[in-house]
Image 1 (cartoon, one colour):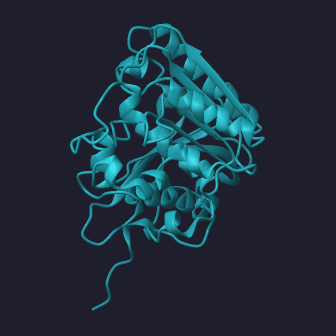
Image 2 (cartoon, one colour):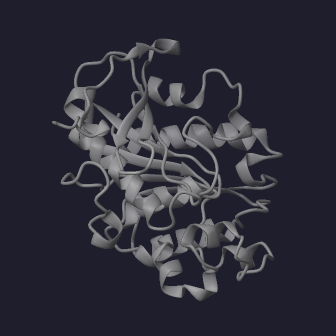
Length: 299
């Protein structure tokens, strides 16, 4: 009996009309892993245009153990137009992707998944109207950590994986990361927590307390992968962040600059994690991100 093709090879559903003139393909499988739910993304496309458009892969937060592709946190709940629609109206497609959470699989499954999302977009770009040479990554919190790794680990066979479509590059042209961990080895100390706590978000991701797996923690830390070939970065963080210390973005920025990479760091005084306590920071962060993507993706 002939088996059906993997879900990520299935024909694309027709795009439906979204709000504000955009086009939406919800719940499209980008990778099928035996024994695991299909990994899906929602694609928000700009209004009909001539020629292929750039695309940004959005990766949600949630400490690698919660969250989903349809949430950007409380600062954007009920906001109209929604952020992804605003990005699409600026001429950039948004692929908001789920990835395996730490309760489903430990590191490096998460980075294998998000690389598969980029490869799928490149492989299906002709059908989608996406320019394979203009793909960026954007994430918040844990998703910002994964977006940074997309930008810094292209071609690393240990982190590439063989999830979904293989063959196309998983490289991205630019990275925007909001309040993201840059070094998992120092996240706990930065907020006064116990680095050896086996229930910490980082321990659940790595499968063991951070001090007990130093090599794995280093591999999972963006700061250890920086090179002069890094793409441009936009790093945004709240000075009052009690979950991921602002020093995480500051150190990542410093290391990127030291390697000769282009990086723009902006810190918001009074803003906590997820822009709590500073709604004006959330609005400005989105505006800065759209402007950065438009510049770097040449829209």
